Image (spheres, helix red, strand yellow):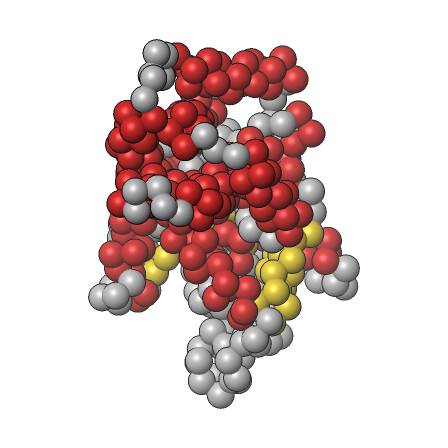
Length: 399
């Protein structure tokens, strides 16, 4: 396995081992009945069948699941085991939530998602089975239930702390998911989500029609994204801590003319860390109904020029124009109704590296990516728009 895959794998793997240890301790401490284990499995299956939680946020379930497991252990001690059935039910739900987070993450590594060869998948299965052996040896010779219960408190609280540190972003996104669901009905077109590598750098290039376009992309992509965002929103006092420390957005200064662009180096550094960087090369929101896509800026070429091996996914977001946060009929939030279950369609192309001969010059790169984005629009069944051509040589330097 490559280093990027290992970096994305070890955190959920460590959390899953901790969940298994908690289960072993709870069984020893409380003689957990099978029906409550069954309850957890049923809940896990029910939530799995719903399938509306993006895989990029599923690990957030580990945070809430570990919290419930901690509550179950502590309740048993504080309540002197007077309500063991209630505690067991809470523990079963917490265990199911943690397992749901692990299962969704693990699906990204299965062969049908074309992530890596079956032999490597079997190697990871052996890792997971090894966790059960570790759990068995973790409590060898433990004879007293009180001892296991006390140790379980320490273990479950440590697990909750671990998950909160590792997956706090996913947990926050998961908590905000009901709001997004209420406002928008987001649908994905294309098989790209099943073809994206489970780790490693990826550049997402999309059209830009509303303030919340990054939210739409985050909902349909199976990995957390690192969006490039204008400082106009980043500097809002109540959003800044969330954007800076949780979502780690790349700030783009909200000025028209600049000599330097440090945000491009930050984007390159994010790609070097194996992140999914989202860029809207138009540089501004769509302003006119008859101009669905503006000329891309030079920034996307500068990024790919320095990292030419980066796979690029071209996207088209349909339905954002006319939404509450678009410039349709006026500035965002003006002269428009609040969105409610507004239909948003996102088309995702297959990951593709831009040919080196195209990357030699900035203008052909920009035109090439514009046409790729326009081509992804056709995946939604929309009528094709005219392709963008290279300007005459006399005009090339002024573009």
